[in-house]
Each structure stands twice: as structure tokens, then as C-alpha cells.
Image 1 (cartoon, one colour):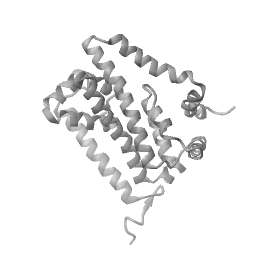
Image 2: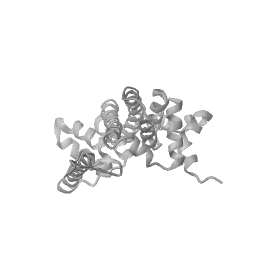
Image 3: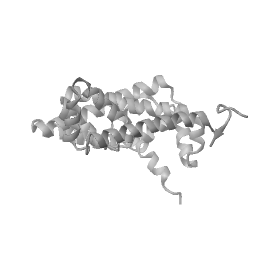
Image 4: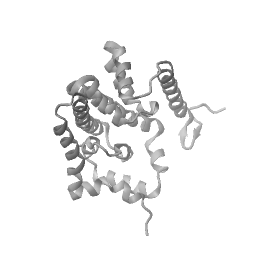
Length: 235
């Protein structure tokens, strides 16, 4: 009889699927406990009440919720705005940045467990070409950091593409860290301004500038919109 280390499913060893399944089940149970027993409806006010009720453990709980937000089904924007309301712009930036960085590193770990080649082989052909093109161009730390910092863009696509293209962890981690803190700072300041009513115009201007200005640079715009172009059927 073959051992679990020799049996594979979809090209991935069964023991790796078991590890991912155990992690997913644990996160699901945790999500049910928090959402059900603590009666949280994931509004900013309920989140604030929950975090404050934990005392000194509140910031750690917030970082964990932001890191695993895909399990709790909480909108990222709500969590990032709440950081400024709950902790202020300085600590809100710190905690939200750490949570976003944790989420990015979680993706890196998941790809390593499943296998980079396995996941890459299962991408649509055109997306494979784009990812392999990123590998040939050696996507830089600054490029990925810019994507992670952009306020309203699905950075997950680029993070996974960077990982699948073979980006080394010593390049990937600093990029995600820098971008996460910039994005966290934007939302934390806007959230605090909305809550306090002071500095709202300046914070809103920063948010709009961060959204619009990068798209005014043609090379950046083409690079950012690359996944959308390749997803369109060729004519």
C-alpha cells in the first residue's frame, strides 16, 4: 500500500491537501464561533465594540481578522476604514498594514503547499503567458509594492502572479510590506477623518489622487490593466 506521501490528486500530494483542509476547517470553525456566538454583523460599530471588548488583545484580533478576512467574508474596505476609527491614523496604519502583509504572506505559503508548478499549469493559457512574461521581465519590488498600495485594485491577482512567476520571498515580502502600509495609511486617515469630521477634505483628496494619478501614467496603466486585457476573448 502506498503512503500518503506517494498518493497525489490533481498533481498535488494528498498530504498537502490534508494540510490545507485542516487549516481551512479550523478557520471556518473560528469564523462561525466569532460570527455566531459573539453576534457580530460586521458593521464598523459592531467591529469596534468587539475589538474594544478584548482589551489589550484587540489589536491582535483585528490583525488576525484582516489577515483571514476571506474566511469571515468581511469587505476589505470596511476593515481598512475601521482601523482609523478604532485606533487612530497612526496605530490604525500599523495594525492594518500588518494585517494586509499577513494576508499577502498567507498567499505565498498556500502556493508553496500546493506547488507553484501545479497551480501555474491549471491557469488559462493566456493567463499563463502573462505570468510567464512577468517572470521573464523580473517583476520588481517597486512594481509589486505599487500594486499593493493602490487603493481600489484587486491586488490579489498580481500577488498570485508574482508568486507563480517565481518571485523570491526576499523580494516578495518587502514589496507586499511597503505597499500594505501605504494602502493602510490612506484608508486609516480617511476613516479617522470621516469619524472625527476633521481633515476630511484633505484625506479625500489623497484618496482620489492615489486612485487617479497612477492611471494617468501610460506604462503603469498598461501594466495594471494587463489582466483585464488578456481576459477578453481575442477577435
